[in-house]
Length: 386
Image (cartoon, rainbow, N blue to C red; front, side, top):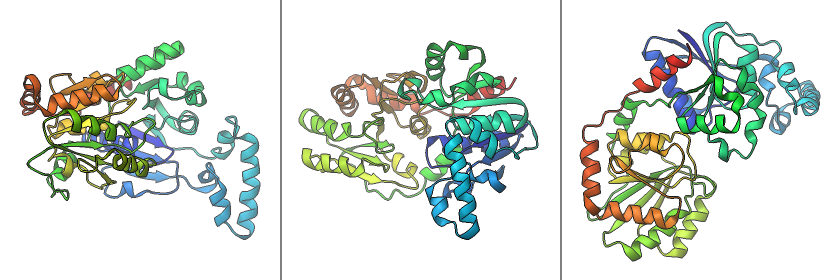
């Protein structure tokens, strides 16, 4: 098949990683893949991305996201032209009229399948109105119950697609329960993963020296207290220091708006001896592979990539409960799922640290022969395009 993936940006994050994995995997399975990036800037994330062709917008349409920075950089006649265009955008941006005007001359070649991979109005509009394809699919990467009504901006487009692909059954069920009009074209398509790359990067030297006298815990996440609840971690560490007899050290890999605040909280609670914030790391897998298990404290996840990445490296995953948790983790077999509270997470981690009822040994044994493949997600994708 000839397949086009369309995104409004390639900002670093789980959605972009999943996109590249889709493109590589489908290309490796014999499909012709083109990635359309509606942002004119090619990010660092594209470095080394291969196996598929890559395109950006040209002409006037590349200014669909026209902002103050574009106007500040422009000079002379171009500045005047962009200024007039900015006025038009301001007058039309609250409806689909701006998208119809700015993308008017865009017309892509024909594809078998066109996929709107970013869940937003411009991406959905572009695929529906400017892409030529027999089948058009929209992806949904988030839980509707945590979108705060933002889904209403792209909701009108969703029934117009051949299929809407949700990255977990729980995500699909949540949307359909809230908007029954979406039930007829709903499908589940899990994220894909680059197993070879993960395993290769895991073999690189770990720049962090782990103590062999302690159990080493890792969390790989954006440091956000709103949705990832990373500020729980210093509080959990305090409880574990008071209640657990097994020495441990917890490493948090990732950057974010709340990094400094959470570091300050760890200092205030006196847990910096057992908790280290490592910040952003280009290769988290070489650190993950040396940990005893990973922990996810999120309030919500769609289909958490960090969970599967941990399992690929045969590391048990301890996670808070969210609708899709049981689709990624088998509770008591390859990890633990616990209620959404600091106390419950602390109790679960203590259970794993102390190997209560042999839970740590059981998870390690069950993961010893674990082999992840993209076969399920690939078959889901094929079913969605039928």
